[in-house]
Image 1 (cartoon, rainbow, N blue to C red):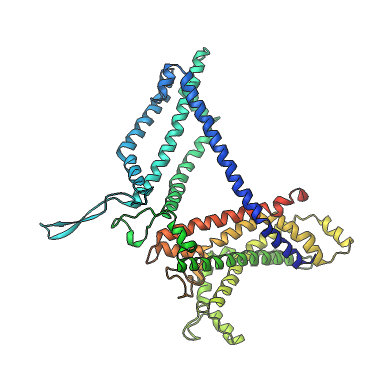
Image 2 (spheres, rainbow, N blue to C red; image 1 turned 30 degrees about the vertical axis):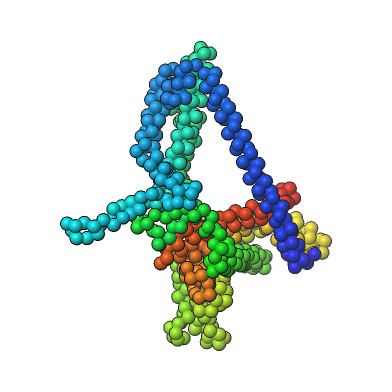
Length: 503
């Protein structure tokens, strides 16, 4: 089977396996939901069963957290649980409950997020209009999400308190003494020390990743843009209308999305595999026995990594500038004009700009691939090559039968992460071309000819129109595309399918 036949075989195998992979994905989600429901049912069974079988103190601990602790010798822990319950109640009454109520106002009926709009008030003494601040829709969503997480955290503490109360009851009935606060502190510095170390990172993850992420997802179900930007106006829940617009309901918007998505996938494919195979070829050439000064060549190529990526991209952007005259153009444009008589219309011609972006990306990406491939080549068993030479295999057959399969097996997960990383490669496009050239046939909300979905999302969020709802929808769709692709390709890669053969 020649290389083209192999490529065709793997392409056909990928698309024929696509329905099965999607079926496995959704069936796995279904099994996860079933296990979640089953586990929740079992937990509720233990909860109500413990209440029915418990004594009066245990029953009271279901309503007053810590009651089953400080009445059985665990005074400090009981006080901590009681204080946390009081703080939670105060939080819900004074802050969280208000935002939670406004969060659900109109949620199921497609109404506004909040119910008190900002109003103008005529101040007769000053002779001016003053604004009476109303509800801030964005803050309502943000603090609503925060309140959900606070409730979830409190429920975890609550169920833990109830479970410990039942354990304390069993301990007392068995004639033993409940462990004191000092023992709990000792456990936190010994058996449960991992919980102490993970506490601060988990708080940071919730505050700076989970809450903003959920808020962004919820924005996709509203009409939040520059026209409804707070605090001037309230914005409304619109359900799946934004998804419908970008997936076909609005022909201009959906047409732009499909064209940007198409270029994003083309860019990710070429950016990934040009760097990968370029680095592989470079590593193979340097590792040849006839090549001298191997360390020098590696150092020269790796020197590009020492230069910050944004510096290289900005310099290359200036060198590729196509000006009004040859003297005002970049040095690379001048060299091509003088040597080959070709005008590189970077930033003007779409195809020229896209090809130049891919080539420049090779300049900053091939050295990384070369280092990875060099390390793998040094670890391929030489016995395999000796056997292939004895069998009469030439260099090409040896490469496609031994080197390439081994490389793909080891670097399969790396290729997937590189492909997904290139889908979201903001730096190269933004710093090199800025999305240029423009294309007036597109939906005019910030998308240009070399924009990726991620750079278009940036323009939508921070551009003139500030179309936050559309940016949120694009962010969700990018995540879905990346997740589904990663799962399907990884499950069909040699790293999974042929794991036993390479061990």
